[in-house]
Image 1 (cartoon, rainbow, N blue to C red):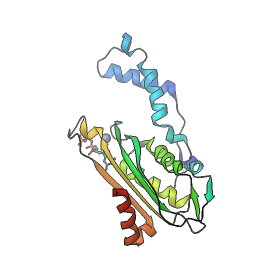
Image 2 (cartoon, helix red, strand yellow):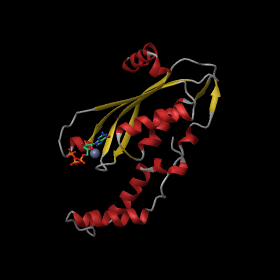
Image 3 (cartoon, rainbow, N blue to C red):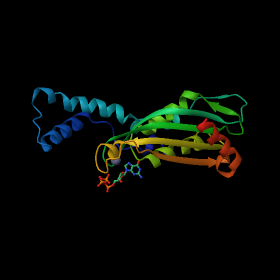
Image 4 (tube, rainbow, N blue to C red):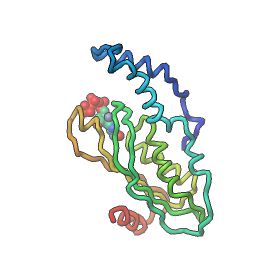
Length: 196
Ligand SMILES: Nc1nc2c(ncn2[C@@H]2O[C@H](COP(=O)(O)OP(=O)(O)OP(=O)(O)O)[C@@H](O)[C@H]2O)c(=O)[nH]1
Ligand SMILES: [Zn+2]
């Protein structure tokens, strides 16, 4: 599981700005015309937001837990998701469903933290499979969940707006850990609730 220690560098707005200016020249545009003059700075601000998950430690999100003596399934469905495909730096967006079985200590995390965790990993240059895996691994590793099921359903703009040009096609990925992997009936219950 990755931590802040795995992160590379920090956000360098000036560097992003000069790269965007170069890119505009590269596509044959005039970066000094009125409409584009502030674009490098705007893109840098947008990237700072879109890639904020690169310099946030996921362990912090799951730091605060509380004892609820609940050892049954917890599921947050339909968490809106925005991420950037690392191949084309184009967005992919959709929903994430996150289910977990609390560890034997009965400690749970705040529901919003599950959405924050998805957000944190989404705000990095990503592929959907890795995003799904990272959320599952954090819940198993850091929270100590007995079982985890993460399902992500998303549309990739690199498949809609360009390339193969198939708008509306969606990609579903899942990552299953612990009891939700070993017990078919528990997994079926979680999947049933996701479809509900
Ligand atoms: N597995 C996976 N592939 C992705 C994801 N996002 C984008 N891709 C794919 O990454 C691949 C990159 O393929 P390349 O052949 O290197 O790039 P390309 O020539 O732009 O490919 P096309 O998109 O087919 O035009 C494409 O097939 C994309 O659909 C993702 O989250 N997971
Ligand atoms: Zn892509």
